Length: 292
Image (cartoon, rainbow, N blue to C red; front, side, top):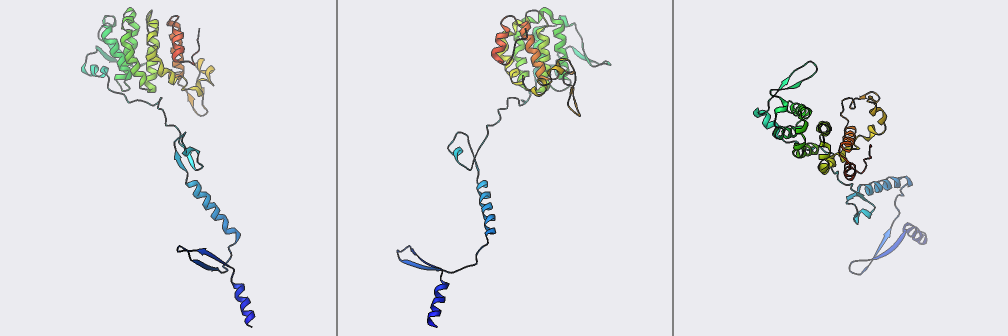
């Protein structure tokens, strides 16, 4: 009987192992049998471990030592903001208009509003008025935007030989209007530049030395509308509306497509700028190809 009891006690002991304690003494521990876990319980633990590993992903800067680690996520570069709209400031044109210095008024007609000039446009001092009206191109509110835009076109239409001496004074207002990156202001300014180039003789050549002030912004927005102007260029050149499914793009009819307006402006620069125009345009906008 004693032998049978001893074999039962030996069977109940699974393993005996020793460890070294903190004081150097030997500690004996006995392990007894416990309930076995089924194999299916291990999968949730593995999934939890994988989830914890994925949660430990840490963002880091590119081209650093941390970027080589497994759980690191490299941050992308911050946006440059090249096409981001800049805030507009009150212009000198608004100040002079509110003060009543301009001899203009609104003439209401059936087709649209026009400017009623109280004096003959040919008698105006272009060195004083033309830069002020160009400064008003930055305006986007009525009536300042209307008077500045329409007034510039009227002055360019009746200016003749008075426009060429004033060209150097127009560069800063044009540059300020383009630097706003406002789509409405960009379209208005590009149309004014096109009118300026063809308004009088030698004006296109006089603008060549100032390409470095005018063309950088045009280079940014030149391919802004590639999704429409490249794939559907034939429709745009034919002055047709572009089918967009349940909508129609009428920007070409209204001449509000920035990509097309920039291309037209560059071609006018090349045609009226003389023999050095293309070289200077190509230097500032490498993707431009000659139209001549």
